[in-house]
Image 1 (cartoon, chains in turn red, green):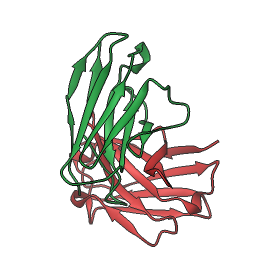
Image 2 (image 1 turned 90 degrees about the horizontal axis):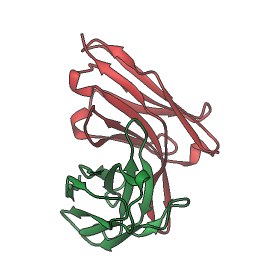
Image 3 (image 1 turned 180 degrees about the vertical axis):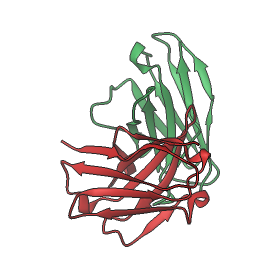
Image 4 (image 1 turned 90 degrees about the vertical axis):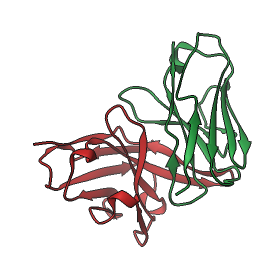
Length: 121
Length: 107
């Protein structure tokens, strides 16, 4: 069965870096676009970044450009999010999600359980 | 990015009620609209994709409709397990998917 398992969250001082991982299993990882979505405490869902199945194209939420980098290692079935210069407002649960495209639409059909990142001194 | 709005932001309902949540976009997104349910401490769960297609395993009391800029999620008879927050998401401006602000359904 499809599984996405995030890791790497934790408490980090503002200005420091953190790398999140998302281990995928149960499907052919290298053929899917993958997303990071975050949710600040008590807030809604916010799209963070997306990467093409082969890693050749990447897109970021405007406010995060230059600080966050999405990448993947298809040989390890793992998605990553490198977060630099973290700010208090980056505190959130970070989810990875798989995108599915079919004749009826484009959507995120499987999500990980999320990993909490807290940027605080 | 295509802004997405939802209404209401929250609603109070009882078991057995018919519930309707509306999602609106600022430009035509045809049928590229998805609905997710999220319970506290859990990941979002896909309910409806392509505006009206029911995701496998989702109860038939959930339905979606609409096209263009106006969309609706309907729960025909609210069950205790349906108390949650519901988000719509546009996927027209691929690969950038933007979410609505959410609608919290409370008892």
